[in-house]
Length: 263
Ligand SMILES: [Mn+2]
Image (cartoon, rainbow, N blue to C red; front, side, top):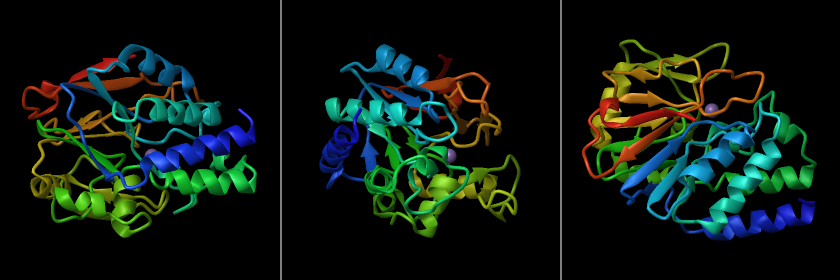
């Protein structure tokens, strides 16, 4: 794509996202959740080919750029599909889409863009939704759960705020405790089981589906916290590409009610 084509695409996405709730209410009978793709267009293409159907909804959990060899292609493919299928495909914001709000390094995608495009991607991607919920007990975010009083407050989280930082940057640790402080090496907020249980109870949800943390156990907290990772092509990530399929017609109480697939 030329720079002008990209700017046009970003304008269209911005118009499409304007006024939309930052908490997506999922209504389809089957919802497919996809973890970080990080420049892995092969994973994105495979998911679109297999699961982009009128009867499904697809939720990508963020981190489309950086660390993979094809960040620009991956984000543009996703944004084009979002324009074509605005109610089927949903793109949540990961910390890597929040570069304009909180910069980080290394950031090969962002650092490789010329300033004008970098600013435009930064503005548009900062408008992506933050969370998605299903009628059968699931909340989905990129990373960890923010300190909010209830589900209705998720949509009002201010990009760049402390709650936004928890949601897009937070790690879960498989141990007791609530707010475990900030990891001195990564700068990421750390949370334990106590935080998970308190926030899930406030949200009135049973299962959290998130990505962000490829080295986390896939299942934590009595199988109620599911971590997906769907990128495979970079030097950083060589594990399986996993996704989750949810039948929203029955209650999701824990991961046993969810189908986890390798693609
Ligand atoms: Mn992340």
